[in-house]
Image 1 (cartoon, one colour):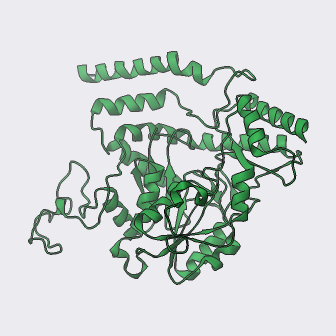
Image 2: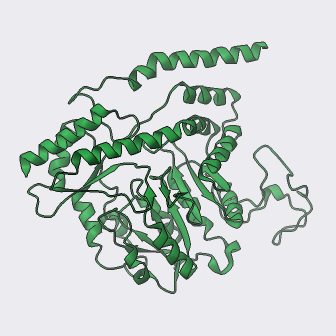
Length: 444
């Protein structure tokens, strides 16, 4: 071992020592009822993530590199999908997935301004934002209140001659009815984007969510199923969409050379493009109005270590869901989420909805839980059409609504969710069951 390798190994050994001293005690901290904060989510990691991070930083490549390529390959193998593209966030993944469908390379299936995309209003805004930002028209349908996903019986009513795609998320890890949605899309030749940001690891009818549609997306923000800090991914089996997403992720360029590499095609100075001079440098030919959405290699280094642990994360989420469900199922004042038929969810959160006629509000129980050191969350925007961002949009021109979104409003008013992430032990799970039961019995 030369001096350089020896020094690097010493640094990595010290990194492990630092983890053991600083972070491990926090990961193993004893839970104390009423004093310990029960967060809805959190990072679960050990020295491997930190060692990978430091290892990557010492190389000082910084941008997309070897760890990024390794992560993309490993995630594609896990999902059994041909291509994965790392990006800098789940929101960017949704942006890239949607904008890929606006490429002129798609011919008559290209989404153009004014075309319609079917979606839901009960979710996270960045599932819908790219549609609005591009100038397409989101068409909102209602939710159903058993699995808390899109009401597929409304799909035909949402259809119009302008419909080009369906773009929806799997709610808190619970797959939507993929069979019905996929059949609808196939019947009408529509694109399907699965926002899989809250459902990585979920299975529907034997196949991973995110791989049923044309494009799937993931987020690696700290609360999600695994983390890079920031980060996200898109994935597809479609060769043309692969080409488009690679271009749009990397500035819109036509060239597919990796960073730091030139002339992969072998004809960098001999081709013709548009009205450019013949032989114009292919490295600087642009076929799309793209972005720079790449992740840093240091983030990907963390992701590689997280992906090794990921199957255990999924199993722990399932275990925690079962414990919460069994502990709360007999409370008659609340409705608990049920898993979608044919599915094996990798749960992101545990959804609770107040039944009609109860003598307390969602805010009452949420405030009680927060004061008991239990973190809660609404289902994101609730009904995003009621947020100020829609004040400037014209209904029936810039967006459409099917029906009255009654169930969406029910979710907005009466639903909340609590965490079940892998860092939670039985003591935290039992404490949440205890406090929810205590509040309901005192206020029934």
